[in-house]
Image (cartoon, rainbow, N blue to C red; front, side):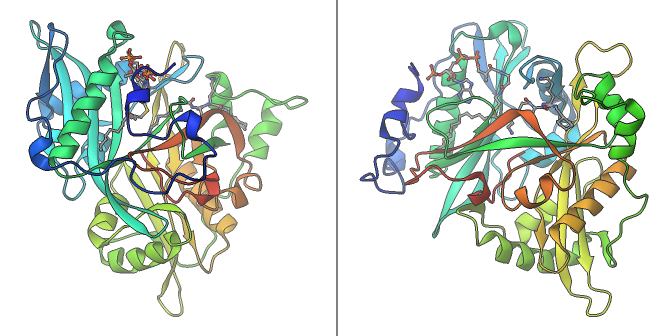
Length: 388
Ligand code: NHW
Ligand code: EN5
């Protein structure tokens, strides 16, 4: 059934429920001298390239490949449209390796036709902090699908991760592979219901008119929580403490230090928005919320080309009720002209989704670990990790 994945150190379907298998690495690391030193062979029309994300030209090529060929919904109505600024941010965190930004070109024309990336991360699974690669942006040009290029790309990124003495990875996908650590549901909160209905992202509910729908999703013009403000550079230490303490409760979560928080959570226009609550009395940082910007191209609509979507990222509430904090996040997202606010049912998100009028989407997201077995399949609420 899975000719490639059956050969890889990942949990296999046949082992699900076998509690005799220990939690932890599936295979031990091999000595670095035993890691294959040359790249895997590609079919002869193609060659490997390392994509320098500092180069405006390379970044543009990657952007165009993804814009035209990356993930679509099951009815091919929308396609993710990560911005160049977003890609630069996603691919250059602290300690990133250029060699993990891997492209494939056609030898004759030099056209970029496939891509896969890794970035380093410290991920905690229960008590163990594991250095991992987060794998993302696997993409093969539409005209080159089903030629088994993806397994070669995955083996090549694995080899380059091994060269850095890293032996585990985390990734998410909309498709079921051997075997999910956890499966999450996407939820959507309409901010601009008229546009969402016009482009087929959502439907007018039964016995609902457009004007009743618009009224249903109306939000206040201003946030309500006293002390709610944008995160600033001087907040990094306080936000790191808040987040580290919060993420302790989840089975799988990033182990963020100040450098990671600075990179992953400081606001970056059009990429990442972060807000916090500073107590007006004590000036303590008590709550935090964040979302990233990921538009989708609208395929084949006369009137609209882009859906502006915000994706819930990391949120922490200690004083402000999470519902109120997230309602403020919706209000700022609306002010910034997002059409929809998306969230997964990870962490404590279940506690606000229904109340804040999110509805379940038609998409699921499966979480995977490479070369790391967990004893059980986790509930989505046990995940403290959001990948981009
Ligand atoms: S998920 C988004 C993936 N990208 C897209 O969906 C974009 C649109 N689709 C495409 O570009 C986020 C192609 O359809 C792709 C497959 C390239 C997806 N993950 O070349 P073939 C990520 O980027 C398996 C993993 O003929 P294709 C996460 C499939 O099961 N495997 O297919 C990436 C089959 O294997 P099997 C996937 O359609 C994580 C084989 O590929 C997959 O032309 C990567 C077929 O290959 C997916 N999303 O190209 C793993 N989709 O065994 C990282 C299909 O079933 C692992 N396949 O026969 C860790 C590595 C690092 C380790 C370090 C220690
Ligand atoms: C790796 N980092 O299917 C990511 N999105 O629900 C790769 N559906 O937007 C993995 N089909 O339900 C990506 N509207 C996996 C996701 C791929 C993209 C995807 C889904 C997630 C999505 C929308 C549009 C469906 C269009 C037809 C959807 C309903 C919204 C409605 C709003 C009002 C309240 C009820 C729900």
